[in-house]
Image (tube, rainbow, N blue to C red; front, side, top):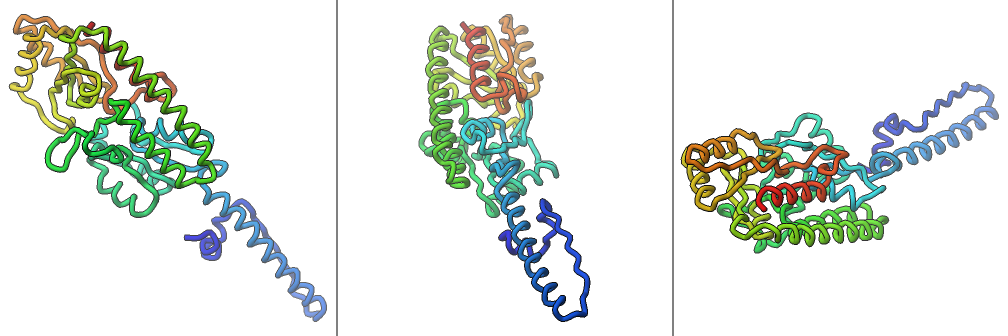
Length: 339
């Protein structure tokens, strides 16, 4: 609805300027004319002030910033870096939250409907929110940023389905970063130059991170490059950086595992003499502990090498609360445990 229409429907919403003008009724004809002129001028001023207030509010959040609601912290991190001072970003899913199982609260719905732009990962990562996100996308600028990646680069996961954990391949995640940049430029074209500059700097940092990660991984003997985790979230990581990846559960933590799944992993660990397995920040340790115990019963000692960030990043304000910091933590944990 335009601000002008909104003004005439409910002028109280334009609350920055509160003008209360009272006129006395004058029976004198001359005074009545003056009163009418004053009334017209007051009305014009009222509209102008109200329109100014509406304009300020409709341009975004605090101080006219573009308000963005992102589902995951990975998406939010890119939006914050690219948007800089021109955006106000809210992430729905915090540390340790499993996006496969996440259901939007009433507060989340409010954040989605009030945002100028909605950004989400897509590829069915936010499985329980798909209906809501589809509905929101018909109402306002929205984008499933991971779906900008060429399909031939994605890992199939069933009929017309793909593995959604694309952020573990930095080269693939750069496609999503480009999509976020494009959405911000579309929403606020007047800041396009700033968005371009910020995005370029962000992407250069990620490319450097990719390079250093490969160097660190190169110190792990090839036969030891087997990554065993709670669920199959690291397939893109394995493909990109040369690891055999095994997860006890499937792509979604919503899938179950049984005794046979545990036994298969135990056999793999023993056959390849793998020293460590890994827990995940957003998944229960119970499944991986079952693998460790099963290996011990077979006479093969395997340790929990540490916990990895998989579907969620760390606490806001910490190193691991950024995409780059999360990635560095995972690389260092894997290298120190398997080298």
